[in-house]
Image: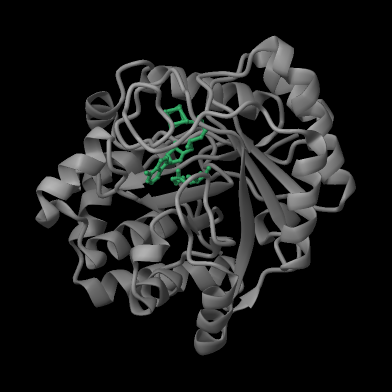
Length: 341
Ligand code: SAM
Ligand code: DTB
Ligand code: SF4
């Protein structure tokens, strides 16, 4: 059984990144199959329930009111529309419905509708995930009581690089919300973006921050930056195409995340549209075992069910149907922690 560590040092993580590529992949694939069925990939579907006009200034985001993008701001959508979209996702084989709102944080007046959405989607028999920005302890509790399964809140990058990408809230704010989510008993989904012009050392710091949390996030999305015209980072990439993340370096990041957080679901998230099938296959070999399906993420295009179906057939992958291994194993605890009561 793999030892679960939360005491990783940056040096150890840097050494993993530095391994010869085939050695790194071999190690990551070994950890993966010790802890997960390697041919199964979880399918999740995203829906933007409140788009654009966001107060935050995240340098990558199409939905920030600070940037001049083509995204039009909308109000929080109706419960009926959410249910329709969730039903379509379920029919297409998706296990989890992830709903995102372009908010710095939910307002108290939004909470009753959010709670109703969570309850209704759960009643359809789907797992629920929400990403609504920062949460107070009380809001996290309300979501937990509604039955929310997962809350997504990304740390995005290393603490050092984070400050260069977002100025309207701190990494400390993000970590507080993750703690509030954890304390409320909701599963934590937290990852970040690769390819924002960060260095290898930042990618080390990114994995290190997640892998040294008191408890690893149950789900770790690794996004490749989707360059959006009108955002600082999208425009930076348009001006300097060579800054685009190298595919092998992206796969290395997935592999290191898998080794450092053996039980987590590592999600190959945004950016698959621009990735070759071979790169995606390497990510699955390196331990990615979850993807977003459907032809849209929140505002950006996604690979789509047809191309994913063809890719799964080619690679012999199947959708994950059973309960996640780590959740099935209730006795699982972190090596550096006392067993849960
Ligand atoms: N407003 C909420 C928040 O920021 O937590 C929820 C929605 S936000 C769009 C969710 C995550 O999507 C971000 O934290 C970021 O990691 C990712 N994301 C946003 N725009 C992206 C882009 N252009 N490319 C890759 N990932 C992106
Ligand atoms: C995550 O890490 N990636 C998803 C989900 N969490 C909410 C969002 C990706 C957004 C990609 C850009 C867009 O669609 O606007
Ligand atoms: Fe707002 Fe989230 Fe986009 Fe940041 S990533 S601008 S918080 S929607």
